[in-house]
Length: 65
Image 1 (cartoon, rainbow, N blue to C red):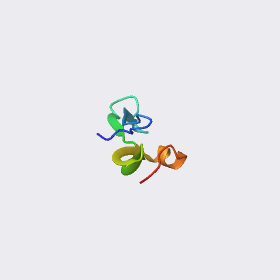
Image 2 (cartoon, one colour):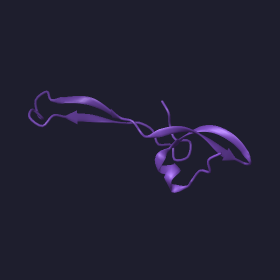
Image 3 (cartoon, rainbow, N blue to C red):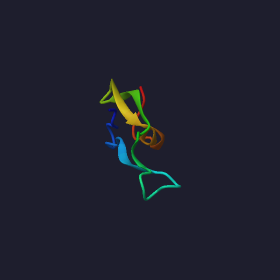
Image 4 (tube, rainbow, N blue to C red):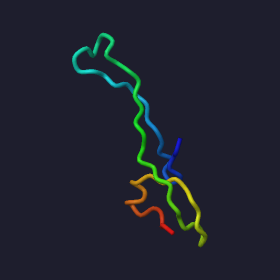
């Protein structure tokens, strides 16, 4: 799966708990995917394609090509 090349952010795993039967059998596995985009980035003067999360793009940690 895609992972941010800057901050190493990836998918998170946990449990989805239903409201009505939370203690019985209302739990199931859940996966939260990070908002990771494939972008062209300038690295040492050259352009390179890498996966970067949108929080790093908004923070200006990467210069787009």
